[in-house]
Length: 490
Image (cartoon, rainbow, N blue to C red; front, side, top):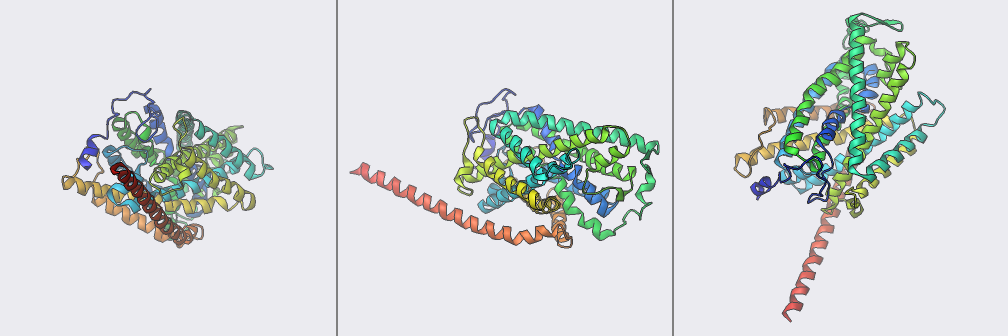
C-alpha cells in the first residue's frame, strides 16, 4: 500500500508555475519556484537572529559563535531528513503526516500540536519584537499598540490568498537577505580596516580582550543552546509549502541544500562579525545588535534604516507563523484531532479557521505586552523552543523509520537522502536531549521546563478526547449504514 502511495505522490510534477488548480487536500498550487526559494532563505532569518542574538551575546560572549555553528549543523541534518520525507510524499500536512505514517497516529497528533505551540509562542515573540522596534522611532507609543496593528495587517494578508502571502513573504525575505549581505560587507570592511566604531575599535582582539572567549564560562555557553535553537525555527517551512508547490521534486531539494551556505554565511558569519566589530558587552536585548552597530557608526539615518529592516523580519516570521499553523491545524481537524472550526477552508483555498485560531493566541500576546512588556519575549521564546525541539525530533525519528521501511522493501527510498543516516540521526537526537537538559539550569529557559508537564497533560487529555470523538463518530456512521442496508432489504 505504501508503495502505491509513493508512485502517486508526484502526479503534479509537471505542473507549471501558473497552475492554481486545487489539490486533493483542497489547496491551490499558488507558490512558485521564486516564492519557495525566498521562503526557504528567509525562513531561518527571523527575530532569533535580529533581536535575540543581542541578548545572548551580552550573556554568553564571543563563544556564542560556536553555539550558532553547532546548532546550525544540527539544523542542516534535520533539513535533510525533512527533504527525504518530502520527496517520499509532498503534503501540506508535512511532518504531521510523516509522523502519523512512520511513527503512529498519536505522534502525528502530538507533533502537530507541538508545532502549533512553537508558532503560537513565536508569533507572540515576533509581535513583541515589533513593539520594541517601533519604540526606536516612537518611544512614547505603548508597545501593545504597534503589536496589535501588526497582527491586524498580517491576519488580513493571510486570509485573502496564498499568492498574496507568497508575494509578501518573497519581498520580506529579499529585504532581510539584502540587509544581512549589507551588514556582512560593511562589517567585513570595518574589521579589515580596524575602524573605530564609536569609542571601540573593530578587530580580532574583541574575541579575547574583554574577559576571554568564554567570559561567562562553559556552562553559560551551553545554556545558550536552547535560545540559539529557537533562532533556527522556521527552517521546516519548506516542508509545509511543498503541498502548495507546483513542482516539489525539483524545487524542494534545491531549497534545502541552500541551508548549508545560508547557515554558514548568515548566522555564523553575522554573529562572528558582531563579536569582531564591538565588545560582546556592548550589546543588549533592548535593541537589535544590527541596529547597535550601525547606530554607533554615526552615519545619519543608518541606524533607523536597519531598524526598519529588522522590523520587516519580525513581520515576516509572524506572517509565516499564521500561514503554517493554518495548514497544520486543518490537517489535524480533518482527523478529529483539533476543533472542527480549524478545518474550514475558504473559497480562495485558505484554511481560515486555523489561521483565526492561532491569531487568538497572538491577541493574548498583545495583552501581555500591555501588562509585562519586558518579559514577554523571553518567556515566549523559551516555550516556543519546546515546539522546535519536538518538531526536529519527529523529523529525525520519522526518517529513520522511512529508511527501515525501504530496507524491508515496503517503499522506494527517494534519491535525495539524509547523509550518514541512521548514525547522524542518533547524534543529533542526543544533542537535542542535551539542549532540553541544559534548559533547566537557565532562569529564563526554565519556563519551558515548567511548561513541559502542563503541555504533556493537555496533549494526553486532548488525544483521549479526540479518540473518543472519533469512536463515537464511527459508531454513528456504522449504525446509519446498517439502517440503510436494513431498509433496502425490506
